[in-house]
Image 1 (cartoon, rainbow, N blue to C red):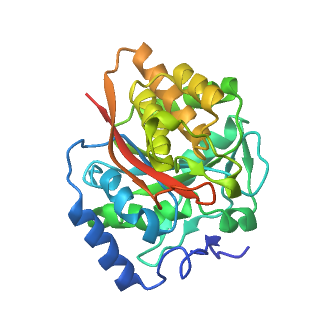
Image 2 (image 1 turned 30 degrees about the vertical axis):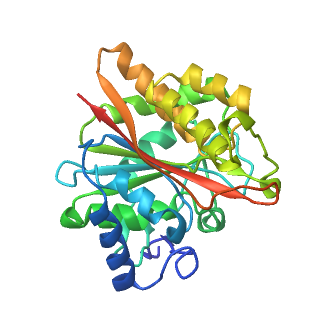
Length: 297
């Protein structure tokens, strides 16, 4: 038996973000210093997963709400961009590398999730190809650095779930969300607009295209803040907004709904919104980013 750990390499370091630990540390520190901690301690955050030059500043607003002194487990729910997946998948790795320091996967929680029969096992190749979870690892490492030997991560790749499956996973994960020592990171960008994304919804009454996009995104963000999974599903059916993490968001909203049944009081607020560029013409394209936090009272 070999004792070698299965490691997931930081496959997007050097392209989506710098592979230099010291440079990365300085960048993250810079972005975090610009954000205020107003909605903490967060039990869950929604934050983007694009290249850091595009969304690093926005994501800081979510990570600023994290309290490392109480967090012992970080669940990261990211959408699958490359492989068709109708359920959720767990990683084959034991360790996730980052340019800052390595993150340990919580094997006990993984074993409990595996026992439910609701999860698939992704290949290491699928895991390393996917960026939706990886883009949260450096920020997690940075936010948790003062307690870096005291926490583990629980990465979950979320497939194209039906509404009933979102409900099932929400129910399953709600017991973890109820625990103050757990933090949930929900990985999602917002509107992907333009011909290259095959999405060009435009409400002329809003003025320029980028204002229409912002209005559409903020409508969705307002619905997420109401913490009602059915309203969010209806919004997506009506506008088809290209929110790539809609299924992880749906799982979170269903987990929250489950806890609300038990009388737990929570609120969600978005703290920052940004666009990769301002679309004015049909040939333009942009991706939107939003950062927010769930607080349990």
